[in-house]
Image 1 (cartoon, one colour):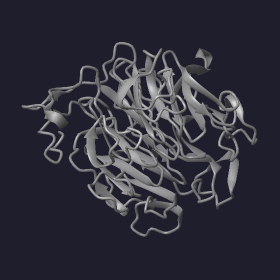
Image 2 (cartoon, helix red, strand yellow):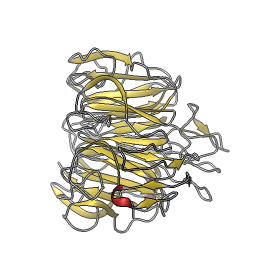
Image 3 (cartoon, helix red, strand yellow):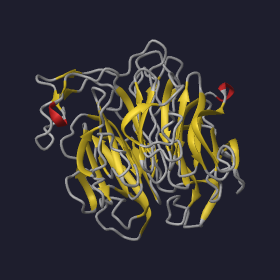
Length: 462
């Protein structure tokens, strides 16, 4: 249920399970395939949770039931999400008596006309994956990251042109990617260092991976992206300056290259210039930038090949921030490591760097984790807890003070997904609404203004 937002919103939405992210056991479909939700992103956020039995989820193989979605990410930025397999329904909800009174007196009664099932955040833009398979984006559009054929920024959501069958999304620094049925990947926006073509800006979606790859999830970094393939392999493309493509070279690639040695991944998350994959065993392997131990590889500088993250077991999802990493474990706890200058590891110490996996204080029974910039978030029982940098209100607690321990995002208790960026964050609620908070200079909160908000505001979904 959404609580009253500082007098602007009345009591609101009843959760009806839009996402099957409320358990900690990975889903198994009728063919015995296990799936977990993945997410990731660059400095702006990765995310992950997991699906319920019978559903297809990002990072898994579609099942025959009603699949659900994850979020993003999104070091990252973004998050990823999944729509239902054929015949499934991923969203729903009913309004409590009176609906939700939005700013200006408009009453939002019941779920939106087309509910959102996942959200992704880039550096200064945001996108929502809708139940219909379409994508809405808003915020900065200087490099075409909103996918509407223009470079005009906007503070209200608008449709990405040409996409009607998306099943997962991810947002990077100034670009956005989506997995479409039946497993292709399309991206739009600015692709640095030959991410698609050298230095090009794509104002409309272009295909990066074809149907032969059968992608099921996508994650985005600042200037690179990766896709999880249904076989368990991972393909990456874009900048490779820190080995973030994981193929044993430092050469950029405009096409997907295989991450060496990864054959049974179940979830994927990317940070600014690093990525990690959760393996079927529950172990994690990471590659790319390690300047602050975000790979747990003894600060080797960087690794262009995957390295096992020591002391992390039982992982079900992983998320990358600018120079830190967090993992959701099957126990419901969350562990983080790497840069901790703003408290983004969440263990109250705020050291310069955390060199071992550290349990986030007070987080138990979590169902979702996200990281971006220098902050992190987790969903616990529908409530969102965030920690780390808060200079622009990105922790959503009504202040702009950093916190090295989790604090509650106010007025939300039915979240099913969350995405974190370097300055803002967004969440999806059980009925399909999207709320955002933090920086808003480019309209990335989607509320029709460019005013920062340290409390959640509605992204006005059409």
